[in-house]
Image 1 (spheres, rainbow, N blue to C red):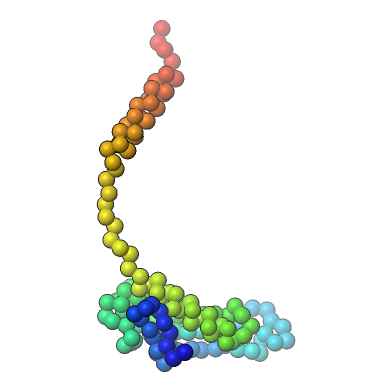
Image 2: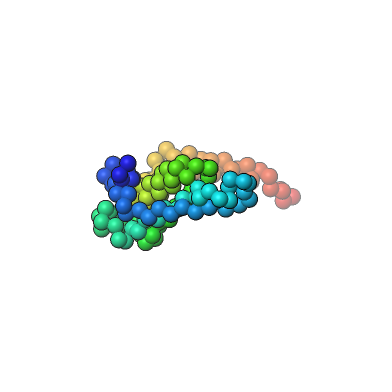
Length: 134
């Protein structure tokens, strides 16, 4: 794998990603405190030539200038590296996603009539609960 596939049209070469490893936090045993299984992947969005100007602006607005992902779930550094790459791709894909514009809608004539009929029925019920003046 020489590039990280984010979407069908966006792929980031791995040399643009900064990968750092370190020891996982938390309580450990004989093995946990000495092995560097925690993986941190950083991606400089503003300095990346892989993204177009519109894509870059969208990602910076949603995630910031530098996107950082950490994985220390597994005991294997290789598995944590794969998890970190997956998480980074998912975050970037979510930031690049564009929702279609919302089209305002209007209730149908039948829906308006049902609502008004229901309001009349409720007012009749409430009017029937009132005390009568004698």
